[in-house]
Structures are given as C-alpha cells and as structure tokens.
Image 1 (spheres, helix red, strand yellow):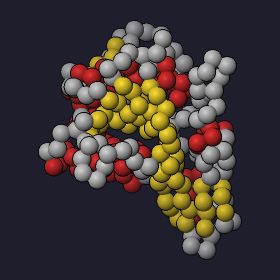
Image 2 (cartoon, rainbow, N blue to C red):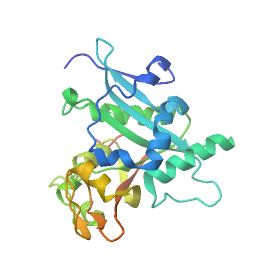
Image 3 (cartoon, rainbow, N blue to C red):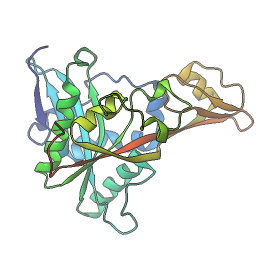
Length: 254
C-alpha cells in the first residue's frame, strides 16, 4: 500500500469538497434516510475541525471520516438518544444555527476505499476523529456505530448481538472491535438511529425484491428486517445502531 497521510479538514480546506471521492459501498436503500439527505453533505464544511481525509502519495483521497459537535447538556437532552445518528445530526445543526456551543463530538461516517480495506486504515481514521475532537477541546467522542457483520444475523436483536465476543473478550463484530481497540466503550443500542420509508415500488427498485406480502422482509445488507405493508403500499426500515463512547482523557486500549 502506498504511503497514506491523514489530514484534518480545517488544516486542508481544499479537501472539503473531495470527501465524496471515496466510492460508497452502501446499498441503495441506505441512501434514503431524509435526515442524511438533508444534512450529511454539509458536515465537512460545517465541522471541518472534526473531520479528516486520508490521501495517498498521489494526493488521491482513499478514506474519509466525518464527525459533528452538539450540546448534549442542552435543555431537554442529557442522554444519548434512541434516535441515534439522525437525532444527534439534527441537534448539531440546530445548535450551530442557535450559536450554542457543543460539548460532545459524534462520529457520523468512516468510509474506506475498496483498495485500502483490511490494511488497518480504519484504525487510523478512528484515531484521527479522536485526535480531532481532543484538539477541539472536547473530552468525549461518541459514535452510533453500524456493526458491519450484523446483517448476517438480521433476526437477532441488536441488544443480543452486541454481547457476542471472541475468545479474547473483544466484540465478535469487526467494526465494534475497531472502536473498542481504539478505547471505545459500548454503551447501549440506539434503537431507531436511521429510518427509511418508501412505497413498495420504491423498495422493489432499491432492492430488486418483490415486496408483495405483508410482514417482515429480509433485505441483503439490512441489519434488521424491513416491515412491508401491502395494504398501505409502503415499507419501513428502522435501523438500530450501537452507542460507543470514547473517553478522550484516556488513551486507546492496549
């Protein structure tokens, strides 16, 4: 693998508009969350001090990591929400518009280019988010983690899935394991972190599946079943994520 350099975006503002150069590996239906579509494209420009990009020797973007900042201590909040990623994204942009100082950073997405997966770059990008949040004067980075092997167990409740560990005590899920090795601590499930709703025709187009019977549908890459309602002509996917907390006053796990 060629030499990789990780840049914080406030130090390399010329890379802000290049965060989408890493090809997305998400299935089509994952691009249908309305909060994501409204706000995610603004994160790198709004919170460059908390975002990072990795480039190779030719200055090609090979990985990105985006995070934002919100006031968890604001009135009516106080605890990490069941609404997970969507809710803290709304909080972050509401706080920014209101001129309210954030006290917590939240990771939004880490994307690794296909040619660079499996080489430890994900660990570097998590470390970059931790360093960025610490440099911004924050002591806490949270992440509504999307466990990347959960789709293999779609009917298993997420609360049960996160208890699965290897012989060494680390999470069985590879992406949760990256966070724990970096110093993260698994807190709990965010039961409704993202929500995708569409007509049955839309779901057929997104997945290639028939969606012709009322009930739960197992969709490839979905973490839990999608609920199909033929009579009402719609289907709903409510994705659970896992809240992980990084205490930035401590270093990564050994």
